Image 1: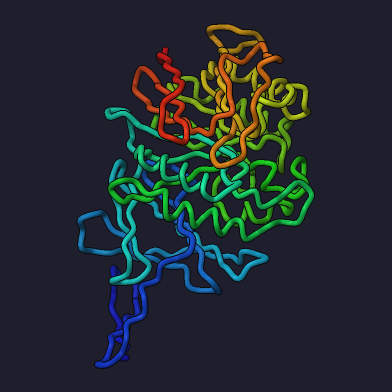
Image 2: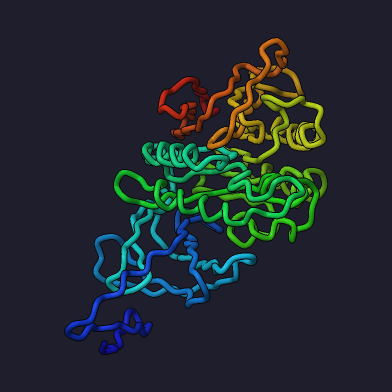
Length: 400
């Protein structure tokens, strides 16, 4: 094998040239590959991948259709308890609503993604769900179904790989299945990788609730968003803000997070589409509504949703389908917030008891599902789609 050196936009790459009789090594194809945003989704993209053992954190990228690659370097840290390393590169200075390609080596496998648009001149579509992986066949089916709808991204409201079982030690290899399914199935019909946004749930944390960051070490190693603060606001141009919240897992609901939420909602009064996403529901579809976290959400977050006119909130955790009536001041009110849930992506289902109706529930059932959300300048349309791909419920709201 002969070693040659080549320069790409100022960076030096080593290229192996085969001599006669030698067999080419397979191009590098990471066992886990997933996209997130840490900052502006219109001009950045954060790429995560895993390697078995330590390796350099570098890739090359380009505008789709270009012949010129640019290099990008990042950082890596060990995925403690495994032989993997987690690599992260954030690309910045990208163009909105633009397709890009990246690879890990010259002549290697090429992957594609698209940045978000700056406005709603064209509708924007995304998918929401939660409670992702009990059985791989369910997770695979739902990941495939989500990708079939060509969403700009998917946001999961916690309980991803179910690696933590309450107080038990982490079943860390479940993360391998989780990311393998995503890499294989969460690809749009035209071959783009779909960004994955997440919030933390109780099954990401040893002990579930009100625990230190180290009890969720895997979660905070694997995902650069929402970051160690545990909660984050992502602004998409001036048309949408996603509030990714921690419902009492490594950061309490009351206190600093509620103050932060108040400040961020206050600054986004004129944003037409504002969506809180979190794990444990204030208005559960299956469980009783007097649990600690349910009461805390209603006491601290729901009044802020009322104050700032939030019309949709995405909840999870209960493993069923749920749509509430619009609620304001803990009463049914047409001017209130509709709470959608309740985390039934790839998990065993729970059936709400029809003999014990909850005053706030408009519709519920033991249905594995996702929410397909489409945004327009003056409206939003949400479809509830079951695992067979059938639409079984919808919400349409005008933006005022």
